[in-house]
Image (cartoon, rainbow, N blue to C red; front, side, top):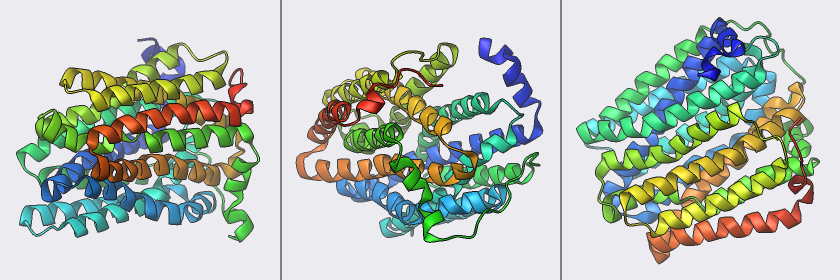
Length: 407
C-alpha cells in the first residue's frame, strides 16, 4: 500500500507520457510472455525434441547478437518512439502470421523458427530504445521510481502472460498468437500517443568507434563488467526454464495450462522480491549480496531439476525468480548509475545482449544437454554450474564483490 500512496508514484500516473509508456510496456510484455508458452508447447508437440526446444532460444539470440551494436547506436541517434513503434508493429505482423498458419494447419517448425528469429530482430532494436526512452517520459527526478514501476509491470505481465497463453492454447492453438498480435498493436498505438517533454536529438553519425562505444564503456568498468558477465554465465548454465515443456508434459503431467503456471512461477517470485526491495532497499554489501543471490538461484535450479512434485517444482521456480531479481536489481542499478545519458542506448544494448545471451543461449544449452543426457541431468548440471560460476566470479571480480552500496 505504501507504494500506491507514494507521491512520486502518483505523479508518474498523472504524467501522460509515462502513462502511455506504461501501457505500451505492459501490453508488449504480456504478448511476449504469452508467446514463450505457445511457441514452446507447439514446437515440442510437433517434434517431441528437446534439441528443437533449445533451437527456439538460439533462433532468438542470433539476430539479437548480430544487430545489438547497430540497435544501440540507433537508439542513441534516432527517434526512440518511432523505432519502438516499428518494432512492435513488426512483432504484431509476425504474431498474426503464426495465428494464420496455426489455424490453417500448414505452419511448420522451420517457419516457427523463422518467425522467432524475426521477433528476435525486432526485440534487438526495441528493447534498447525502450530502456533509453524511460528518462524522457517521466517527470524530472523520478527516473528510479519510473524504472521500478516499469519493472513491476513487466513482472505482472510475466506472471499473467504464461498462464493466459497456456489457457488460450488449450482452448485453440491459434488463439494465443491472435491475442499477441492485438496486444502488440495496442502497444504500438500507445507509443504513438507519447508526447516527449525532452526528446532525444540526433547524435554523431555512425562510425566504428561510436558503434562499439557501449562495449568499450562496459569493458573499462570492472564492477559493471563483472555484474553483467556473472548474469550471462550463471543464467546461461541455469536455463532450466527452456525444459519446462518437457517437465509439464512428460514429468509433471501438467498439460499446457500447467506449463503456463510453471512459466509464471519465477515471475511471481520476482514480483514479490521487487516489492520487498522497493520497501527495503539493499543498503550494505550489495556486491556480496549479488553473488549470494546467484548461488541461491543455482541451488533452486537443482531442486527443480530433481523434483517430481508439482508444488515443489513451483516453489523452486519461485525461488529462482526471487534470487534472480536481486541480481538483476543490483546489475541494473550499477549500469544506470554509472552510464551518462548520451551513452545510455549503446550501454543498454550491450546489457540487453548479455541478458539475452544468457536467456536464449541458456535455452539452447539446456536443450542440447537434455538431448544428450536427458532433461533431469541437464537441469541439475546447469544449477551446479551456476553455483560454480558465482564462486569463481567472486575471485575474478573483487571490485564487484566489494561494492558496499548503490549510490
